[in-house]
Figure 1: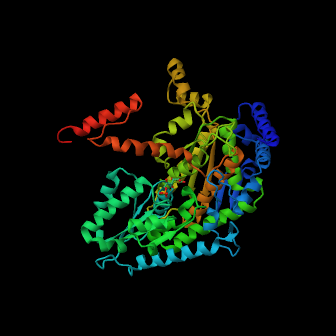
Figure 2: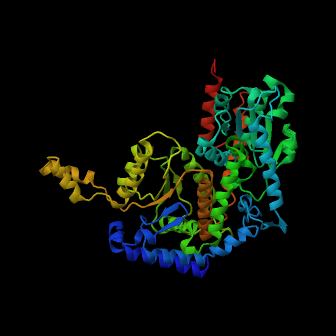
Figure 3: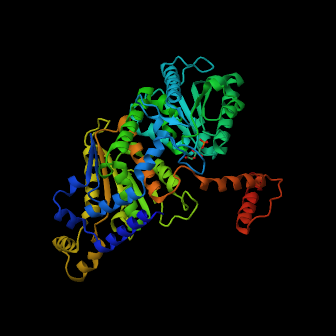
Length: 549
Ligand code: G6Q
């Protein structure tokens, strides 16, 4: 840690101690311009930070930290194709995937844009063939169902986008997502499908992932049992960086859509991993998503730090995580279509920044990524919002909503929006004892009965939220939102000094699963292992060997 960042952290801690308990009601009363001062407007996108537990001085100190950590220089290193993913010795260039301008983007001295555009052109042509019905299955039937087989970054992003924008999809071309090695998911999906009309997209950067390879092999067996081996060519395509493994699986490399090692899994929905998006929604929608990502990239790259949305979101997150000690962060879209956004952002944030050592291998000195979680509103209001309002933890929340719906049912959207606005207000300003007493008295309670209820009915308030509002949930806006969060995570990773683009923490479990797998076979003599795992394994083996099992 440099002495400049060290000083910036210390200044923030001293500032926190000086501020003491922060009252949002007081901050708003003291500054009539607080809303304008602490919100950003990017076209129709409003990002309101004013209900966060901070002052202008807090932001000034956070910006000092960003400068001391050289956020701007790291951002330029990313765009310059430097190998900022140091532990994997790779560049990080997902921004190239959505770059729509004429400028080159270099990696190892080569402009990657011609290759990016070539893959997009192939995706466009293929999506058109399938969607127009000119691509036929082995029996001559058109494709009505696309099954994306992939996991993690090869599943969550495209799945989230397809669900979010399903209102733009054609009802006769459905998208399904199979990720889990639990055969229950594939079995339930296949049970609804006709092999003659199904196209499988096997999406795997490495083409070695156990879950994806197992699901792809089972899907292939299901298809060939119905239509024969020759049908594979019409019903399977691949998205991968590993042409050799794709060919070995039996998919013609002509039917492989490539991408590059400089695209991290959780940042890959903008690459050919988005093929299922282009198939389900149409290539123009996929392009509009890229346009949205590019718009946010330009903002991130050019806006001054103090008006830079990803920078500010990142810094506010740092304030909560490292200075106020909040260990979780809730993403609460008031939009059912964004049901999978919390899961996507959970991977983005926790896999990128859930690290305990810095780039140079030394331990990080402060807490890194919070636990990211969430559910759509209003559902969450009838469940965990109790803790948000009256629990002992402060959980900073993001509330998101579109001003306009994409359905024509009257009466719904106004209620949805009223609830979002009400929650932000209730979290921030709560309900004090005086009001609770007055309400209970008005309801006819007196004396001990009244007093006994007061503490239960008080809402302490000062529970922070960031509200993000936009016109409609369309591909462009979704692209902006995803890129906004990607860059927020980037900013935080730079400040913590970690490599946000590796994921070594997912390796050990994979390795041990491979070692345990043979010991599940009935004839195996299990290898010695710790008593708990050995006991569990023995229990499973007994149950699996029961007559009739
Ligand atoms: C994402 C991770 C991880 C990855 C999956 C699937 O950043 O690296 O979630 O996407 O493990 O990997 P493959 O695409 O190689 O199958």
